[in-house]
Length: 586
Image (cartoon, rainbow, N blue to C red; front, side, top):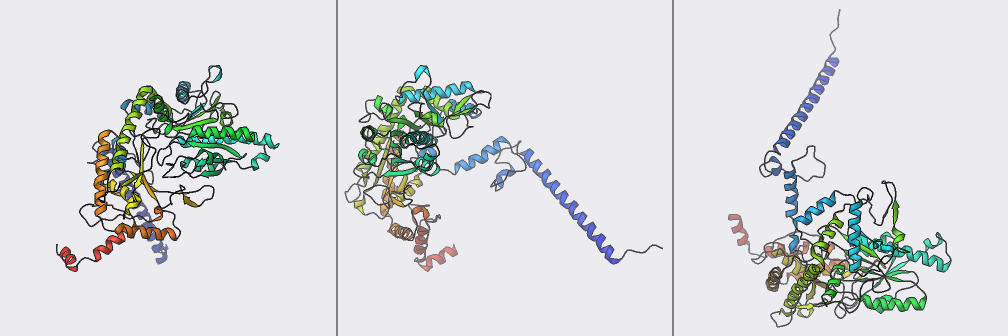
């Protein structure tokens, strides 16, 4: 006789059935979800982005989505992101070119599909790259190569890579010389740390060289007001010793666009090497000036002396193609005086791609867009085109400089103190600071924030830096403290005269508004200083919050710091309670 299942067995069966049903239900939910996603995915190819369900969803895209999207919808999503940036054509803080022609963009797309590292597959693209190097080397008066060969240089993704490549070649050249001079083996010389001498107005590329490649920094601080940031040649060379791989001369520093006197540095190095029996060379960091100074010289408005390979001790020059070289994508160039005992130290021969070729870049695989676009621009503009472009930029810069120089405060004093190199023999840059004698309750960084209300971005910054030699936060220049602020306006090729006039008008109006504000900025600055005294290095250490200013002249950001928000909150608390009640009633 069969026995009936126990209550425990019945309960176990029920649990199993319930679990199976739940699992099946979950599978059905997943199937429905996937079907819905597929339907939505299909719909995305049939309608506009604004009319699709995708437009109403919050998407952060930190993970790859399960389903793809139509091309126009993805483009719309990226365009939404781009719209939240500043307008690049009104960004006078950056040196990077922001204009291009349709044909140029088409050339960049062609180059994007070519891995220029593969010389055996893309020999014609390599030849185009070499032609661009030849044109630039010739522009900088490099010695003609022997036996009809190409000039020695390389296209890079920017001037940072170009600086690093030059630094490495100079370091290895020095190492060979130092080992022979002191009878050291290849292993023993590795224990000797070399140094590089440079102005404190260096760009970030050189800090990377110091950190990444174990090179000691020897930094000379120029003066701001008297010397306009151009380094003193004697002071620079006085720091050299037999462990110095090179001295760097900056052809247009990024703070105010002034040129270091490369010609004077060369004369000092020539004397030093002859006296000491050393072989120190010069690297010219022409990130911005490499495509400005040569064309100024062609127009009869050049520097006081040579700045390139015409000087015997200049061993290498680097430049950004995507700045005043007018390339629309990340492009840099480094040119060496010769291959022997210089460029050969960084050349790596590659044979596993079906042929034999040399690579002289930090990164191996890279698109050909940079060389393609630079080649396009060199042919498109020619020498006359570049000369006229530079002339236009300098004229527009002079207009802005003279406007700023003549702008008066209501008390009759000049509003600004000019800090750049003038109307000629420098980059197209206006650099100045609010007149310190006015005792204003706002500074140049405040002016930057206020100008952004008009969609213009002008770079304001304080004059301190972290010294790579001491790792201490120090004054950038000899004659002003690190709390000093200034601003710069980079006049790129897209800044026409009409745009410059609009910027001038906005500067004048913004200053009037800033004058009318109460002394809230003094409170902000004092609290920022208190934060610095407690260990903060700069204003960047202050937390950022957005706030609204209670007034008619500014509706959004005045100063985006937590102190400003607290100040506004205190002002609101001081208003009458009747006003608060009326707001509640409304």
